[in-house]
Image 1 (cartoon, rainbow, N blue to C red):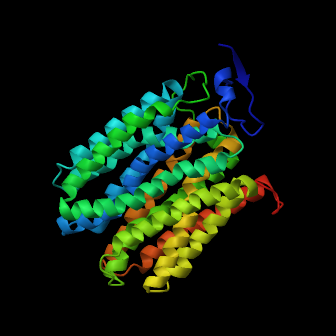
Image 2 (image 1 turned 180 degrees about the horizontal axis):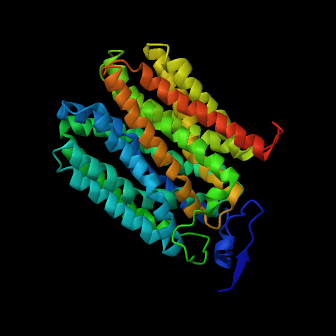
Image 3 (image 1 turned 90 degrees about the vertical axis):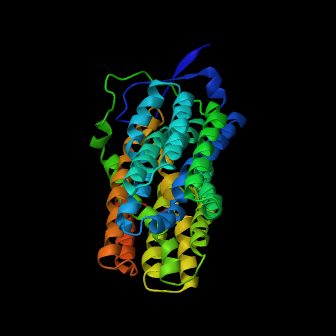
Length: 424
């Protein structure tokens, strides 16, 4: 089988080694096989990220199960799920480069599913933080990083659309898993919900990990983790914007469901709000992905970030009605999903695909910092200043994070291209 070197554009300046692509894989670019890879990513993310997106339903159960435990402490479980995936993503990216990506995904699926099975036997918040939080996040990173980077490796013409479709799997998973988890919690208890969820993650990994074959093969580096990307100004701006956007991203997912019942007194609406957020995100990730192929991914991300800020600070904050909360959830869900779906595309466009997995893994550390800073602090603000019922400062805190992210993205956009009419 013949081989040839892959040449990346000038944007990929901080990666020096040449990638190698087999001729068979070159012919697979934008092909039917490429779309099958996208489908595999979609299904794996549906189960894995869907678990984190439906955590708000588990949070309600934990508040009843552990009434003396502060909400800010219980929120750490969900924060560590998402934050762990992103923090350990830098190591998962290295594993994908050095080993067969299919085995990395399979191992991550078995480990993440086992973490949920173990958590079903836990009887304290501390144990749930370790198992459902840290362990699930650590193994989940081995699913997240490969699946989120594969569409950019296999697609070129419709890269943003393909990534949007793949990442929409997490929102679809959060949509139906919110209702399914709520029903299982009512009929079987949350212990069995965790067990069933764990078996689903393992089954998905066994079924779809064979599709996660990487297209780009790069030589092994002497350094296990290479931080030279941090010397690139554009990468730093993207890192900072992602940090603040991630800080505000999960607050509506965590706090809108209990808000609608405790403040608006709408019994049974918590799962509905969670599903509205995820439904909006499903449509948004696909539609914005399609628009990004024509308007440019960075332009689309900047617009989405501004609209997410408006949804939180202009709609959710001042109004205490079900109608405006639904509108805020729809707009936020539709726009905020681009934080996940467009970042891999922007990364590939700016820095190339040769070491995309490890670059995304390094960038996702910003998500870890953001989620660790925002969600627990937002919970503390709710406990200390809101006395568990006034969400004002929690909403302001989350909205300001998105506002700062929007300003940073604007700086990045101007740094790359000053003309507002250019596709970037």
